[in-house]
Length: 302
Image 1: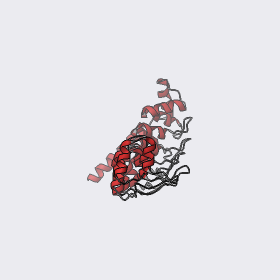
Image 2: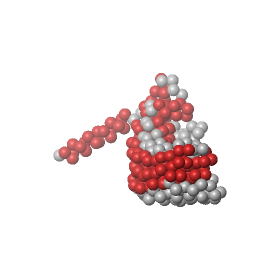
Image 3: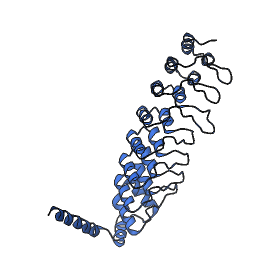
Image 4: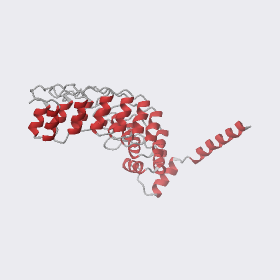
């Protein structure tokens, strides 16, 4: 009996939905009454505003759901960027291309991930969004979530199989992007999910920096401590022979705390780069008295 009742409700809802569906003629009338031109610009404007009713009129008349603006951005990309969940649902219901890319090769998923729109990220993935599509700069949705501090989004992307090893044009993995921006919780998440704490920057203009070297260079002591605890090697050298300690000593800002941490965890205070310079030499060159004292007390040789 209960099954029959529910079946009747479903049928009535379906019939009701069909009855409420607006015809192209009625949609044109609505647009005219609201003085809304039937143009791509008008469609894009109402998508960005989240006005599903008006956008529904455009679609009913026959406007291509994947119509793009001058930057190649489709309505789905714009709605995902703005966080308009109901608009995203409407466009997907009209079979919007979930993996369309704009002129910069960005996707709706990247836009949603960059802005932390968790529900939209979930929806796009269920509708077939490619989690590892890369932009013109080779950044993926996981790069976007990691650098912008969107923990829940990063977790969803990882659960969907996002590749932790992909490197963008800057030579950065999602982990390095998170380190640069100081996104501690995401760093912990990425490491817990298998991010390589000793992976080198492989971009063409890079010296082969590791996540620890980046953290030392940026003076992010807490992050450096996490990386070391997870197995980061403190004495790895770049192509020009520089260690995390040397990178810290070269910085124009105070790096005394991260230098102490590195030394406490076995950093070679007398390691030389390819030019024969040590961390102490760089501290002297910068006239950093505090760092000079720390290094001398730790066994650095002049």
